[in-house]
Image 1 (cartoon, protein in one colour):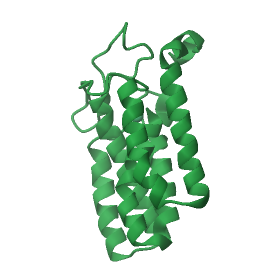
Image 2 (cartoon, protein in one colour):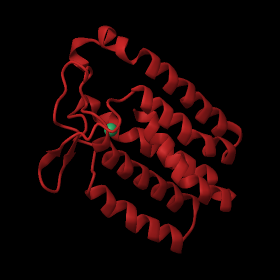
Image 3 (cartoon, rainbow, N blue to C red):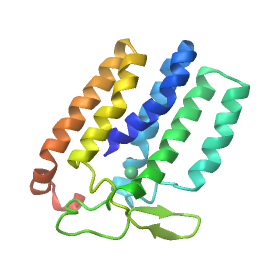
Length: 183
Ligand SMILES: [Zn+2]
């Protein structure tokens, strides 16, 4: 689920934020937006329009290098954003498909590979977004960031944890409440 992607990004940047506290806010905001942003393609072709499992790396890796050479709030934000958005796209292949009811109607499309022009198949290590194992992963990943970040950031992370758990609890019922045009 989208929040798990946010926690992956926060867990990745947390050691850097701990070491260089003056960049903590830029790194966390980059990770939060980078974790959520790819899924805004829900209104276009979900898991394709804003998901770049290979091309994303071509942006993230140079941005990480630039940030190491020129550490600033801007470069830290951009690197955290690009890295988290890239890992988001890659790790969507570890879950199920983008369908609303994967337990009754599974597809073989996890995320689109723009380089080879085809869909990657879902590995289903996490069976579907909002599955119990997804919630466990999300909460586990949030632990370190909750210690590293403070103030408003800690409140935002805690809120996302609560949202994740509620989403996972309601996940199988959501299908009944979703308007047809979103499915
Ligand atoms: Zn996604």
